[in-house]
Image 1: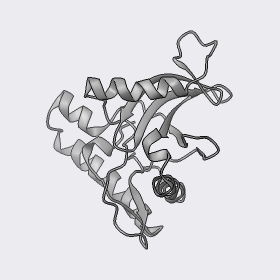
Image 2: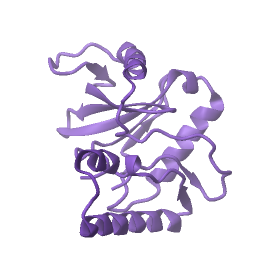
Image 3: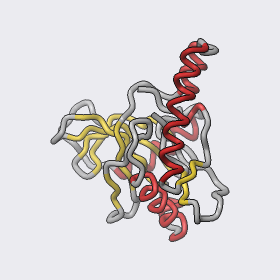
Image 4: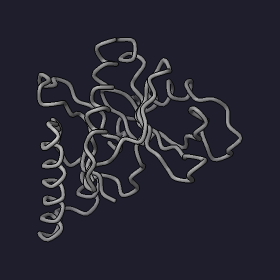
Length: 190
């Protein structure tokens, strides 16, 4: 499966800035700490002893990614007993009408594509000061993390991943969507 950001409908102008891959590793400690700081201020108290706090009733366990558009946290759906990845738009961008609209446009475009090789969008919240979208948590990490950990992939595995990426992109293209940031860090492995 691969992450759904940044994407644009075909009729939209090309994006000039990147979006946040939801499992892009937070490698810069200072940046990760500053991102975690505003996320921690956003969370409400929780009775779940393992959680950092709650976001709209969902316990949040960790910051799992960050990028130019915001932060992604690992949370749990209490009702369905499944883990989620919640992509939060950064406070700086949330105050910009154009950035908020781009965030929602990307969410709508991603939600329009249903395919086994594309991470689905479960929900979007626009009612709060910091909007967010909810996706399944993909426990396998991303392709870049695998390559960093294991080195070059065997040919059969590389071909299998390439085929799945091509099938997912083809499904997106049939819906008039272009993913503008295909790279190993945006290719999720389940």
